[in-house]
Image 1 (cartoon, one colour):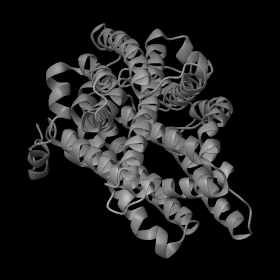
Image 2 (cartoon, helix red, strand yellow):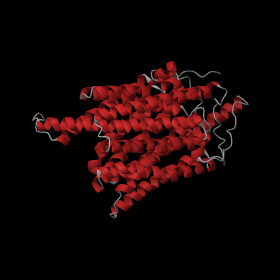
Image 3 (cartoon, rainbow, N blue to C red):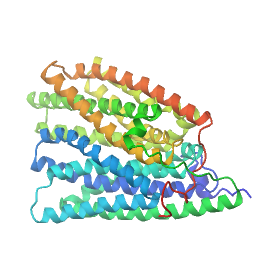
Image 4 (tube, one colour):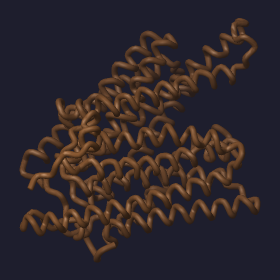
Length: 459
């Protein structure tokens, strides 16, 4: 018997194409990632306070290299856990490890151990791995069709968590102190783990009922390949192109932030020197600009996620939607490269960043819907962590060469970014073609049986 559409189902149809009985799981997943992102944005100011207070901005910029080195060790270890544990046990082990780290950092801080470098490296790994793991979990629950329709709701939870986490951090850091924020973040991780466990139990029950009513509807997930996490990516053209696409995008993004910072700093310095600053210092003017900048990004991304993302995916499809972000980057840096006026720069960067936080973030997680469980967890960790950090390192090298050897200014870097963004657009086209091939060429489009992990028994 067909399920009746509830009021909640009807209400969520404003955001996405929700069908009867789908709204509760989608909202629980949105709450799950909301809690993760809230915890991260509570912990993020601690990173800035420690690395800048105990180190320097230069040290901060060099840490991306250290994070890449650590990821080369951590990602293969994570892949072993994927093959050894069922889904829920995997998530529990990894999450409790990060919680234990936060408690340990707090204890070390109380006895006077300097944590600037250690914490900076740790949170760079934590942010990428815990979020990638969540999206692997979400991909594990949904079929291709369900994910394409419902991920916009889940993505809204991520956008809202980022916004409210920043606000909560601003409220708490003064009365509680920097180190106590670590414990607040740890509590958030424990809370999201309970939500994950509830979702897992609920979906296992639904899968069992579905299998009983529709014999043969469920199929066993292929056994683990035995390949390393890196071999999974480098041996699969589709996954490799996703990684290259992300690396190019994050190189463009990090270089773009450098361009924006240099333009804003020059404008603030000029304003103070001309006597038009109203008594404000350069740092205050920069702070005012970035407060407005981040606010515009957050508001725009929330509106895009709420009203446009699901419609873009529905009418354009994932294969075409993935090319929108690099196309916007080409346009943004064309504007910056030839019209380096602060108003145009602000509008270009806000449109680029807001689209990344909403549409691009949602769509690039949909790319793993037709993949195997091993690829959703192990290969996704390689792509979402290592390739992202390689993009940051590439940008750091580009900025170093551009400033010390080539003598590039803001417009010169913008024009270099146009070329990198064009390469990203071409790679996105290949990724889109690969996705279409996987989803229309007879590959897996079914729901993976949740009671049948790759190895071992129930979590």
